[in-house]
Image (cartoon, rainbow, N blue to C red; front, side, top):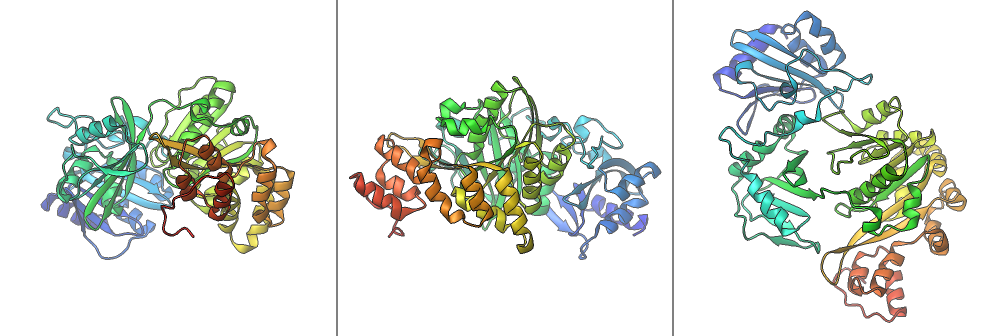
Amino acid sequence: MPVSRLDALIEQLRSQKGDALLIEAQNTLFLTRGTEHIPLVNARLSNEHVVELLWGAAPPDARLSLERGESIEFDYVSPGGPVRVEFRTVDGRYFARLSFSSDHDPLDHMAMVGARLAPPVSHEGDPVVDEMATEPQRAPANGQPPALEHYFTVFLQTGASDLHLTAGLPAMIRSADGDIREVLDLPEVAAPELEQLLLEIMPAQNRDEWLRTRDTDFAYDMPNARLRINIFCDMRGPCASIRRIPGDVLSVEQLGLPAAVVDLCRLKKGLVLVTGPTGSGKSTTLAAMIDWINQNRSDHIVTIEDPIEFVHTPKRCLIHQRQVGVHTISFTRALRAALREDPNIILVGEMRDLETIAIAIEMAETGHLVFGTLHTTTAANTVDRIVDQFQADKQEQVRQMLAESLKGVVSQTLCKRKDGGRALALEILLVTTAVANMIREKKTFQVASVMQTSRALGMRTINDSLMELVKAGVIEPSEALDRAVDKTSIKRDLAAARFPVTQTDPGIA
């Protein structure tokens, strides 16, 4: 595609009063205007097409970076006017954003740290971007804070954990006891207005991602709180799920984590997993464990998160927190790069794909202590889930590696307390020699019985934890039954302890 083709596209951007041109490999070419997302070509583009389209416009010293897929920014004077071109690689796909220089978005993540030809690049090709560059503008041109901050303020005052905004519906919160409730003080918002309000608080790169994919995640700082925001679409239009991130990291003592969990923080190497369903407090538990290490050890900690939730202040440890999409392109790339960053401890916010899991296991084998999360419900299920991610011919090798590297699994769930709020129930698996042999020999179905007979070592099943909470009068027997995975077993335990059970789940036999 010669430069005349690019000039024609830029002319369309000018004539249609667009905000930007978005060019993405494995997708098509779009013009954005406000909240509109207008396709300009029908064909899907390849990486080569993206480079070819930009080649004639790029200055000679920028072309090598284009060929290599390195992040770069440059100006091009087209017949339609001066244009700012931003180019980067996202998950192996080339992506470019073009906008008129005179109208260049002041919130853009590169522009905020100063115009430059090419940002610093790590050995793995990650653009090194100042975290401040990702933060949205705190006050629009009229000097007032973003309108959504009123919603956030009301939400924070309720003490709820989550706020849900849906086009055409009232705002809803997840209260301290875990129930979803309407917030009477916050009116419903129609789809176009809600999208405009959300666009106002999005960092520039998240606006581009939202317009391309209709999904995006980012963190947002309020004066006295930090929020994790996920924006998505449903049949009604745009929606947002906002989670409160506590300003202070809760300690292991405040969370009531048992000694067996703290002992996992003393390890020098190996893989430690914290698992559970979404909203079960995995991030809070991991943050407490990292904070314990920060206070009691003198090590280098690297965290890889999406987005950064709890912010750790270095105490005895040196801590580097990296955000996927801001400081690195992907979990996988950041993990590979970490090998050259001299870490003792690595936290992987989410082990979401096969390659990330494989590298994490490898790093745990080679002398690092690796913490990670998975969305599994029991310790034994966690081992099987990891193994099943791999092809059949690799599974035997993975079992051998897990048997050597896996040191512990903490599976957790949150239960409704009798007095309001929520209580933490934990399942703890410590990988002893016997458990390691079960992993090697495909006998993970026996792990639960080992946990029951190894309570003296600190192990416990989720049913053990639920029964402790019932006996202590913290939760109702019916809540324990609802939260249990092995419902037959806990019904027997509750009956033996003479606790009456009222079934709340019609699916329970």
